[in-house]
Image (tube, one colour):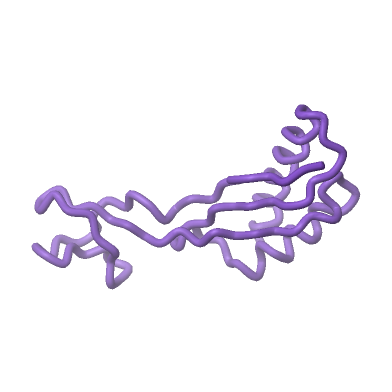
Length: 113
């Protein structure tokens, strides 16, 4: 479950940022997670519960914003939401167009006190 290692990095960054700002507690950790990031939402929540123990984020909630996939076709100069894993352009049917959004795994917001 690679989510534990990934979440440990997020918790470490959140704790550092909160302490740098003089906070004593982290109440909310908001993340942006892309549809094709390879992260499983249930595993992410479990990893959060494990990695926050013993930190100033111990009582924090995790809020996840799911980011949909957006692709770009250079032939047609359009952005689109793909209908398959091939990221095929709906106009010219070129496969494997550029993924411009949907791979995110990032800390977006902290609520601290």
